[in-house]
Image (spheres, rainbow, N blue to C red):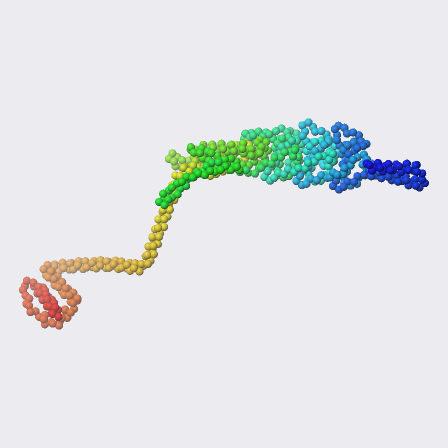
Length: 607
């Protein structure tokens, strides 16, 4: 401004004062006046343009020559004094006496919004918000980003205050007299989650996968239809998309450019959640051992199972047959994307669902099942305890039976199924789906298991004894076979001897049989002789035959006697008279035979 005055004064002096005060020639005066004109022109030109550097913009403030802003306006659209709606973009911009009437600021730079961020706008001027309105109406679609121009915004009834429209990533030239921009991260819904929207504005929506015109009816959707009413679900007030409140549709995984003040998005995990109930009790065990004498000995030990802070809660204590049994279990719960708004509207986060709904229900239902009855499918029995048959097959019936402690081991799948069937309707009231319930290893009092384990151990010991006995018998058989192989020659000889004795016995038997047959034949012949010769003659004949047979056998065994008898034949002339009729001829022969034998023995003795 000082330079402008200086050159203007200088020009006026050269143009009017100098030629009149200091007379010169025509040529000199013309030159002085020309210099004055140049000084004035330079003064005017130097204040009639602005140059804006690249990536900058020029904001202007009118000081002179304009009217006053009225109605609380702070940005001038029609040339009033004050902040001006128009700006100058990078480049050279001439305007008569621009720097005289306006203050020009070329320091402001372009607004750059990086990827993954958004620009939240707040307008300092415009029409006031309507009563009850928290955010300005979104920019008209037909104008789009041209509403960022302050003149367009103010001339098209733009509203002052927080804007519903946000700036997506990019570069913008914004008039800071009108706009205040806050750069914040864009909303991104991760995979496995949905975004439950609590809206503070009533407007049309265009969020990519979720679109809708401004609703005409924003009555609350209280938990759903008649089917949901039958389920006795929580009265979770939801509204159509675009209304103020919790929308009945959630945002799918993705990135969204929305005003975080206008739309509060809650990330809700729709993946299966594993809720573990365990710890916080003492587990007792009884170990069985076998001593050297074969007796079973038992020892009781106790171990504290600590509470894990990551678990949903401690183990559930159930009363069964008078025993307190700590029962660990695992529950898999899930909230579907469609039900996420219902959970948020009714209870809040999933953690609150766990604490307020699932955990109390699990504890109550597990205690009811363990201390009451459960459904079991089994064969129908008659009065004698035998299965009832139909077409050769057992008749299957479904009954409720009291739960016993050992059922936690023997009938675990049935108890799990019973708990699942009872917990699912309770969880469904809170818009939560129970996928499965699994029981952990129950801490059954070891006193209940000792008898069974002792029986099992005794059975195993018995089987082990049988196996050892079989092994010993096998070893004896093996040793016997080895010794038998070593004595194979002796055994063969003995076996041959046994076979020979059997043959000899058979031969003797046959010989005796033959002798018997012979004697029977002789007796038959003698009987026939007696019938012909008479008894006495037959007896004498038999005596003679025996005598001859005896001589034959004697001479066979003693041939030297026969030889001596033949060589001394003359001695066989009887010197002893044999006579008489008492013995007959047989008696004579016997006497002769006796004399001969006597002589033979005598002769033999002399030699």
